[in-house]
Length: 299
Image (cartoon, rainbow, N blue to C red; front, side, top):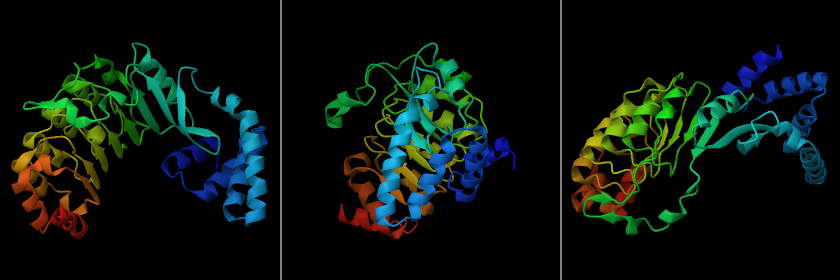
């Protein structure tokens, strides 16, 4: 198989050990030290404790020697957050007017399939350490949205994971994101503290680019029962985080009517998010998987 075909195979099936072995042979022929890295890391997975220790040391030395040159394939403004066999698989870019161009270049990396877009003011969300301090009777007290209409220019076609946590795009940003191009491969979508509201959720669920989402994080987004009703546009969900969204009893009704409800493996909500009546409905809902129903019986 040609190297380019192998790369496509590995983007689609990153755990294919045989394909990585074949790719290592191709890298050896090119004089790329990552061929040796793949070989050693695969051997370390099956080696005994003594051999594994020696291989781990050699792997670390090889990576330290070559990592800078491997990362030089990406723009200098891009941060690598995850790697496999020396290749970047997840990158982070700080949002700016130049960000769409940087992202386009970064996503040309051979195995980059996960992207985090962050802001310079609060990249880790430290200011939200205690969420309860950021609520009043009208909902979450969040700063104004950051201008992010440039999200519409992104090509999401290679991505399987997109992380915009703590990037306050608001509903205009969500609408711009929904208008981006792509092939609908994204399985993990992290929108914690993005202030997208019900209209933002509706825009994303109407976009074919997010039809494959399985893990959705919407913590603290001013989502109400109306937004929960829109979630039917994510039929493949197995993990849903709706914490710090006051969806109430009506939101619970909408959630229990969603097509994905029986497939959920993880549901993150607080008692105050759903009301006492909502807790009772979750605790007795036959359509909710047994483990989740049991949890709500103990809340």
